[in-house]
Image (cartoon, rainbow, N blue to C red; front, side):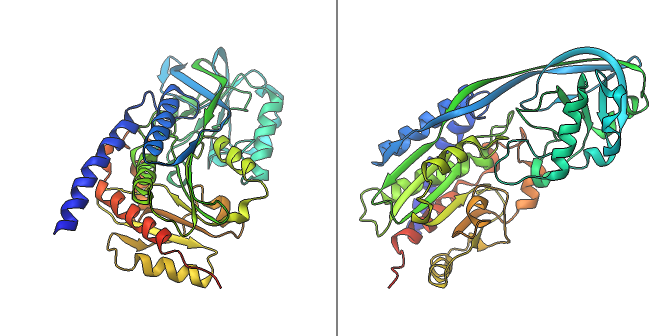
Length: 409
């Protein structure tokens, strides 16, 4: 009973951290005012826990929008500007295309090109995304830019696996794309789809610019070898980002408090990484560059993303662990009812390690599909969606994992 009282009391305290991180305006997209406030806050909390804290900064692109309007055939069609896209104010003919083979049509030049069908079936990978690519997506992007339309409108709905609860999802979310772009829900698209060849008035009120952002890295003990515990601090534009991923940052705070002053059996690095929800992953690239030639020093990269979702338990998955470490994870988490084994989950930063055969671990929610469908990347991702007691349990589990670290012969 005493342990439960302590846990409930601590969970209430963590709610304050969660609400603070979600209060920074307008959101925590890298380089924004809210993002800089969030990283300063995280650095202060980790420093106060007695850790050595650094804040390496890096270049990135920031963006804002004031919406837009589209009028075609006397009808106003709702549009959603694509994050990190350019603005435009134009009048031109509508050209509706659904086949990649039609992207080289000369009449697309200076037109308002509407992408539908197979051209809008899934989000297109940004040109500079560093961790995977698609030849098909590259061909589509290059063909659009070569023909130089005045703007691109995409007919999209929902794509939870990559875009969470956004509706419509952005077909092109890319600060390097050279054409203004916005998106239209299928339910709103009928006047647009029937207007091929007719004039339309389009305004997208967006702009982007170069800025700087920073990671927050807290360390204790020798860093070779070390356990790296990571949680991304940034958000998509327009979301408070409670489950995704202020909750993960709160777990970093809790782990820092638990390990403060203890004699650690292995070095520990806590990383509030800044870029998981950014099209170019700038914080991840900066952290990887700083660790070039030293990634083998990381005995385990443990990433928290999407944890604490109210109503479900926390789910963990492991990747490329040696039997001794796999057994240590299983033993450490065995008697924690709120931490259960889950399916493989590659939609976050641990995939950087997991897909390269390195030891990695992820902690998210067992209700990941529900969370993606209803919360991720959307305004609905508020602190009320988080159960802080789950975060306390995760921090206890991670701390136990580190303090009971197995020694190899």
